[in-house]
Structure formats: structure tokens, C-alpha cells
Image 1 (cartoon, one colour):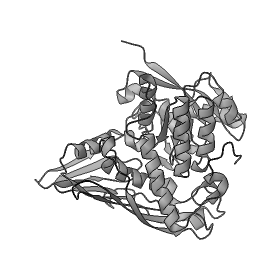
Image 2 (cartoon, one colour; image 1 turned 180 degrees about the vertical axis):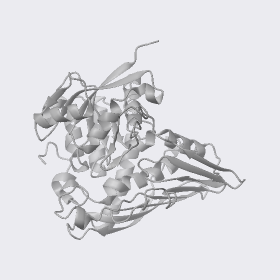
Image 3 (cartoon, rainbow, N blue to C red; image 1 turned 90 degrees about the horizontal axis):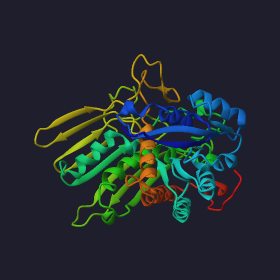
Length: 399
């Protein structure tokens, strides 16, 4: 049996999502049936200082040899790092990712990829210039569940797709829980709002069912009609965004797609799926439903006009009960021994590096740019613009 290829990660920023990703990253891949690769963390950096990076490495169970840095500049100079995971707020993604690319480092960048499409294009251009791997970390695309949904669509079981509806909303009670306006969800200096943070998942399900399922040569960007409601306490973040996208298809087969996102209501109010599916893909032969939360769905239902009804459960793998191991994000801790699911995207990165690929076919640079263009248009139609220092394509800019 061949020795697994080890991919050496650097973690840029040490917040909650970095902790969740890192714990999943360090799980034994055999728990999900993967034997050809292994992940390890060789370094982490915190803008708060080296002590925080030291603490982070201990919290996630990184190897004792992992190095702690007190600046991102130090991290990207580490010669033993194969790829950097960029987990800062999306307001900082452009600056932080450009830092990685300029230093010759491959990068996996948390969603939303950037603040605007111009920044996304610049990063793709730099990655191409430097011959580096670059991918937006929309982890949901790499779930077995997502492969199944895409396969159902490309198999023709649903017939011609007519309509996709998708909602990813969370009830945050922002005036109570974010009263100072500094939280990333409502702070314009962090590109706050529902659209870039939660809406990216609603859009992901529209795109990966209608756009990614086509051969690249047949994909066309959608038209966008939208409405956006501003969060009044900070005046420059959206609390509710609704989008109608029309994806052009030849032969009068255009697909309508609706995405909604909010920070005032939940897609699953009781947290038990009783509210029904959060995404429905309708074809002229039936539909497939994806149940919430759309960023980490674990249930689908296929309903066909021929009478077929097929429910599937998609639990995330991990070391299992009795392991004493837990992961999750924020207050959403998963059952004992069950992973969050972020290892699937890490595996995609590993395979790409081994194969010499510079992007993922399941979320190419081109598609990330098109999705950013959609969100640009939604913000334009709603009159939402963030501070120039986080909209700019200049580099470097201190944030």
C-alpha cells in the first residue's frame, strides 16, 4: 500500500471558522474512506500576535512542530507551506490572498471570495501569472450530497430544469446580539450584511444546479433583478436581499432562479427541518429538494412524476461515537464524532495540488467571478457600497 501524500497547510487568521476547518482538516482521512492523502498544519498566524497563534494550534490539536506567527507576512514566507487557508472576514480576502499569491503560495480562500468582482478577477489573474492554485472555499460544493444532486440533474431524471428556489437565512436578532454594530454581519467596514455572508450559499445552490451542471462552453451569466433592504442601525449593510436570476438557454429553455437571504428570519425556525426544504430544483419530470441549512445540508428528497419518492440522509463522517471528539461552528456543535464537512473541500485542494491543477472544475475562477458579478449587481440595484478601502483593487492597502 502506497504512502499517503501529505499536504502541508498554513492557517491565515485564527477565528472560529479557522478552528472548525482545522479540526476537520486534521481528522484521519480514513474516517471518510480516503487513503491517498493526508493533511497537516505546519503553521498558523494571528494578527493579534504570536501568543494567539500558539493558543490556536493547541486548541485544534496541531502537531507540536507547528509554528506560530504573529503576522501574516511571516506566515507566507514559510517555505514548508504547500497551501494557505485564508479565513479572515471577506472584507480582507483580497489583501490577504494577494499577499499569499505574491509570495508564491497556493490559496484556499473563504467565501465570499472577495468584496467585488474586480477583486476576484485580479486574484485570478495573479494566480495565473504565478502558476498557483486558487479556490474559493464554498465547502458545500464538495459534499457527497452535492455530487448526488448534480448527478440527478445531469442524468436527465428531472427533465428540463424550469425553476430553482433557494433560501439561506438565519435569525440573529441583530439589535440585541450586535448592538454595537461592530459584528461582521452588520459592520460595513467588514463588508457586513446577509448577501455576502449568507446569500453566497443561496446563490451557490442556484449556480451549482443550473450553471455548473452545463459544459463550460454552454454556460452563460444570468440577468439579475433584485431588491435589498438596508440594516438601519449601521446604514450600510443589507438585512434582506431577494434575487431573481434568469439563466439563458437556447431553444426557449431559460431557467428562472430565485435566491433569498436574511438575518431576521430562519430557513429552519425550529431547527428540526419542519419548515421544509430550503432549496427546490424543479424540472418538467419532477423535482429534488435540499433541506436546510443550505451550507451544511444532510437530507434530500427526490420526487418524480412517475411516482418515485426517494428520501436520503447524508450524515457527515468522522471518528464516531465514543471518540470524545466534537466539531461545529459557533453554537452549532455537531453530535459526538461527526465532522463539520470542511474536509471534503480540503481533499479537493489536495487532489488538485497532486494533479497539478490550478483550479477546481466544481468552482472555477470564472464561476466565482460571475457569482461576484451577480452580487455586485444586487448591491448596485440596492444602493449598497462599502468603504473604498475594502472595495479597492489596490495592493497593498492597510486595513
